[in-house]
Image (cartoon, rainbow, N blue to C red; front, side):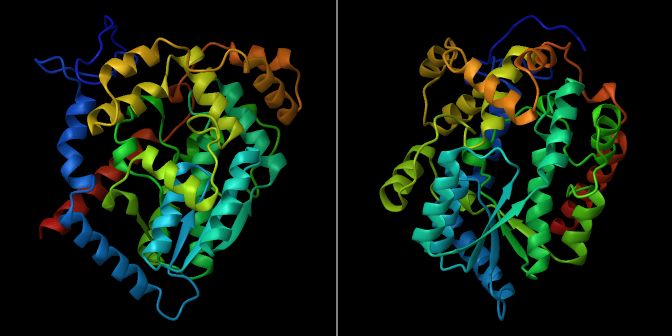
Length: 375
């Protein structure tokens, strides 16, 4: 990888911690340029978005005719998914909220899910992973010393949601993912979670269990659910006026929802991973992407973001406490955990993977979709 002198975007705060970042003649980076170009397509545009939302909701309800549910909603207890549940209820959708339980829920997240589903009056189902098997896979990724320590969760979520959608013959999954607050995220920070070869190679080298119950979501299964079962994912938050702050206030005032203390801290694994391990070990600070998105969306000033970035991404007073929690969950000593954290960083190219195959498959798929759209 070519070495780059440090440089930061003059409009957002993305910098050369993303090795593939590029800058135009104005000093603006490819991330914020792309974000602003795609804004009209993926962010609320008034009446145009209102009409698009009406069409999507009509399709969802039509597909839900004579079924118990119109859609499945993935819920984590975080802002986005809980607000998506709130929007679904306002739109009159019959929702089954599904939580993929990997054993790392914070107490606040559990309470949030309970409050939201009960006060909205929607059904709820938990998809619980086999803890011993999942823990072994997570630990394998930590020992592999790659940034993709979240891959086991990232792949289990869509796998669980699609399984339950197929179980109830539901054709739509509602996601809390949205472009307004997640539009900027460098691809170099996380390798494709759908690469089953990569997952299995790491588990084979570092794990102590065979993956018998773990729900994978390979490209083959994705295509099966999409083209054979006809299941689609709808990102409703892209079609409504959405900001984190306003959504939080609504959830707090109307549903008793409580903030959990930091981005992705609804999971005690994800929160510590993204705030401490990734910045410390891989120079990946997710605040750069979050703040840059907010700057481009007009909800944060660049000056404020720069001042915030001077602070550490983690709370120094709670690091040892969080390490103790992780150690207990994995059944290891803090000393062993520290040794794993301090291992030399690696990436997906250090292990067998199907990157070239997957890039080819998805390139062909996107081309076919574009051709179909323009036909």
